[in-house]
Amino acid sequence: MNRAESERLEARFAGHGYSAAATPAGADVIVVNSCVVRKHAEDKVINKLANLKPFKKARPEVRIALTGCFVGQDSPELRKRFPYVDDFLKPGEIPAWLSKEDCSPVLPSVSGVTAYVPIIQGCNNFCSYCIVPYRRGREVSRPIQEIIDEIKNLVSRGTREVTLVGQNVDSYGHDLEGKPDLADLLTEAEKIDGLLRVRFLTNHPKDMGPRLIGAMTRLKKVCRQINLPVQAGDDSILALMKRGYDAADYRALIERLRAAMPDIAITTDVIVGFPGETEERFKNTYDLLAELKFDAVHSAAYSARPGTFAAVKYADDVPAEVKKARLAAVEALQEKISTAINSKMLGQTVPVLAETYDKERWQGRTSADKLVFFNGGNDLAGKEVPVVIEKTSAWSMQGKAVEI
Ligand code: SF4
Image (cartoon, rainbow, N blue to C red):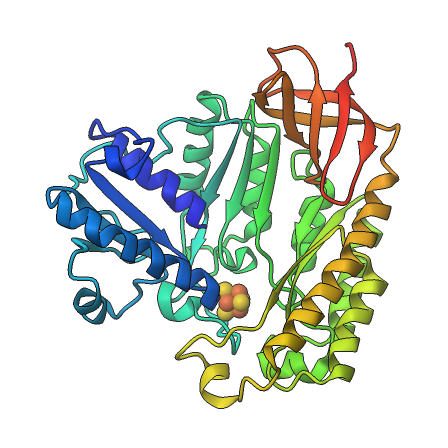
């Protein structure tokens, strides 16, 4: 979401004749797009802002703007803390001094082969650990036609794959007239000439319904890949997290997805060291990961976010070194699983969308979102190229384009 919003800000600035500076030293405006999903991310923002303080002193004419989830509702407090920052913008907000008359709809200035397109902003779920609903507010969907027009425009400028993004894309449309859903949006996107692929990020297991699975199965352009955050495999932890499903519900959903699309790649997100996570409860998460064998797992150690239900009500009682060890255990397990899954692709020829070319090698992704580096002619950008896979690892693959 932040990447999508950075691209859109860049487009706004480009509409006023700005272009990206290579370093802050060469900039007239500096925009810091922040994330506070974990403490580590927030610390990075604070460090970045601290580094800008002497910079602003030396060049007071440089305008500094802070945006993203660090801003939220409490900007008076932030103004006191960072007086040298000129603008505090809520996520997705455009600086008032930048006229709103340019480029409508707002589009990335230089479109790449792939692009992110926000479809819904905010979240109504209030998982107990999560700060997002406090910072981004309640769900607001963009109308289907606006999204489709934006994708068509991107395609006319060379984009071939779009990722529809939102905190919870499964909630898409409930606040719009006629209550369209993500399946309806995907059905409309399928009709766009020149668009080769559509992905979406991210889903909530309690909100993902059969209509979406049906659309994924039916539509040719929708990639065979989904991110479905489980967060924990232990029912008592899931209840403390207020996720609204248990491990059995989640398992059943994975079974439905795999029955409908045997070739689907599924990734997940996991938090280890949540308050109350005993060794036994952690083992339930570990065992679920071992059983369901995801293509990739994005794991993180629990970090209390001030103001959330979990931070207020639960003691952060898992010691840091235990969290670290659990994280390492999940990562080691997943490396083995990803290595085994990816090794099955050895020798296969798969379509790869060629994205970028560097040092005489292409980088692209399969429909299942596997990263592939391959050799081939230098005019392949934006094409789906058959690539024979010659080497695999847990993280990526290598191969060469098959002569057509
Ligand atoms: S669904 Fe995602 S964004 Fe919404 S509260 Fe839960 S973790 Fe946060």
